[in-house]
Image (cartoon, rainbow, N blue to C red):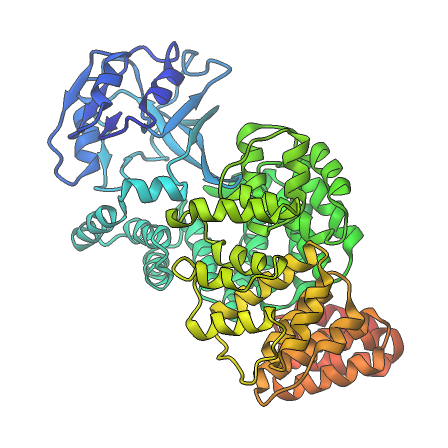
Length: 621
């Protein structure tokens, strides 16, 4: 091991190898915390190495002290799982691949295979200043695979930020590329840019890597990451085109189909996304392991989670619930599944929801802490039922919302008064505005003016609404204000304070605010009222959203002709796949000729849609 300031995790790592290895050798590159003291509890083989910006140099220095027949390389933020005692068994290969499971947080796991166990030979040494690896020739050396696992948590966002390694790693890689511009080094640079959220830079580096060589074990991962970068940059058409080539090249690896499905989904091609995720399930999870790096679940529970999301968007709530319950049973720690589950049953009572939660998400301290955080982020009334059932003590800021859901508004206000200066709650603006309505006290907005994110004009606007004074002038629309407005609507619906919804509807004639009210009402099944709220304006972009929202409610109410009218108006503003798809859904039930016409327009405008081509071909024959 080489270490520096690893007191957070070193003991956990060393405990995991006790009794599994013959000697522990640790090279410290300049720790200033308790790292060495922790290490001394397990070994006296601790050596110092002056850091020179080269991980291989430090690794090779550590190898000089090894006396055993085989060498196992671990990092401090890793632990070993070897239940079958393979490491102390009959090893006879020159090197062994071991699976490393990287905990990305929120239940997501990235698994890759890497050489971590190899014969102690002076011929085998590390190369590469960063992401160093031993140099082995598959044509000469014998290699094997172990069922032993290494568990790694160093890729979690909070840990990456706390270690502040991004700039250091980027600098090392750029220096390495100057001297050795290989495909592997450009791949590592691209991955480093992804960690930093610099997707344009990552895309350029990954393209360079693939141009230099595309026949290495990591080349598949390069293609997959190119697909992801295009997706993150919102370049969905390009992402789909690259993905379509990739699934032909790597047909039976679900990771590529999964990423294709994600890009189709964001682009609005729901049926193509559905096909892609179904293909993932057809291939299955085992095929993922053929990829050097793969995301656990792309051939099983992650694909099921996405199919739940697709079916929810298609209005197939029962099917969506089946998928999400299956996915959550298989992977209860994936936080995103809980979010989807809550979206599928917006009108279910908290008691009904709790029965599902008890069954699907059995109690575990960390898991339930994540569920509570999710319920708080969604400001969902299940929060109270959950807290009561498990007899939990909660603190600010969760306690504030807890008291609001209990209708104990004065206690919630007292919490805010005690804690507002601490700045620990990003919902403080929402809570102040909500309590101002519930307590019919507009002065609260003034009292908390230094803690909430409202301008003077916005504060006055909300106060006038509470006082039932219809504003005489329009308020400037901005993204932050719209988000506050939306959360207020959702909070009031969740609390079933419908009289305030009527107040908000009558308080504004601005189309943007009414659109949000309509969308929220629609989400909870109040489609007739959602239609009444909508108004047009002189902004074509807003009008298009108005038309699409109207069409969605009209479809649910069975008014197909009226829905087609608004879809055509939306198409007149801007044509996209979503408009054509909704028109097709209506036409497919009433007019076969019109259905074919719409499908042909889809194929012409969006040749990337395999579903449209297949559906058209099936009809024509």
